[in-house]
Image (cartoon, rainbow, N blue to C red; front, side):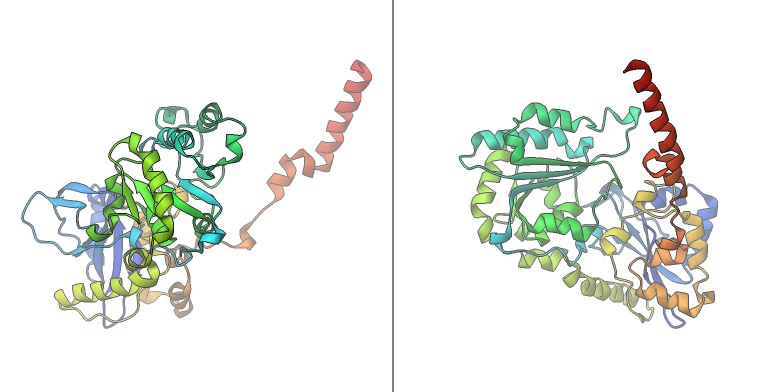
Length: 407
């Protein structure tokens, strides 16, 4: 989302980034373009790419661009500053390797059942793996199911459980768990809880053919799991790390099962140290600060004040209202955000400090932080018969009348 990386000080500009999805809204709106122009007096502004751009021409409104070195292909000679990091480089510290003795699942898969993640291929791959492997393997597939919409049925495999049950016997399903969730999609588990599944698995399988800068693969590498995937998924890595025992490339779906067997055989020899250097927030937040300081130096601007470096793996890529839904950002509109950060010098000092200390400073600014004081059980207690004494009474009366009439 539009992400505050550094607050403005009297002696130094702040830093704010926008996502490419937000930029599409901004460039089509004269009002938003005007707000962005105003921000340039107070902020150094970056554009965070949530997808690759093979027809790239740098917009002059931005001072730097956050993307992988292979993700932007310029179509002109306009100069631009590339900060070769993005949300995928800031895996939370909860993702770290665990000892082999604690691992329960051999293969882990995580992803929504949407077309580009190819959930049907993931299931067929495990079918193939079970048929080829001489060992009795355990597999976990965490699959958050999005809200059902009829017009998405061609691009979302809502019936993934039916397909799973058609592919695997009852006995096999004791070793292959398809964990479908129907709440808080696309993130039913907080990241720390999710990390437990990673630390207790040996190898990660990802079946998208074209998903560059894949955040969930970054989680796997930081948790010490070799990744089996198509080459695009490894785009987040330097070339030297795009090889076994950390990465097993496939270029055809028929190669998945053999690659998984190979990865499992060599998983114990995988040292995730070099991957942490590239992908873990423990290592990368300091690198980000140095890169931003270099950009400020290029612009001949003093760099003072610390980064708001919490949760960058989420904050850099989320959006404001109207893009991706509230589950993927904030309810606050993009224009409201831009107006608010243009007047940060007028904020109460306590609020300013709270932003510095909070896990999600943009939520503090938008007054959207979670609070138990805002919870309300009245409607649920009224609607559910189990919790509503009056409704229970009428239901029991109806059951009594039915029994008297029909026996």
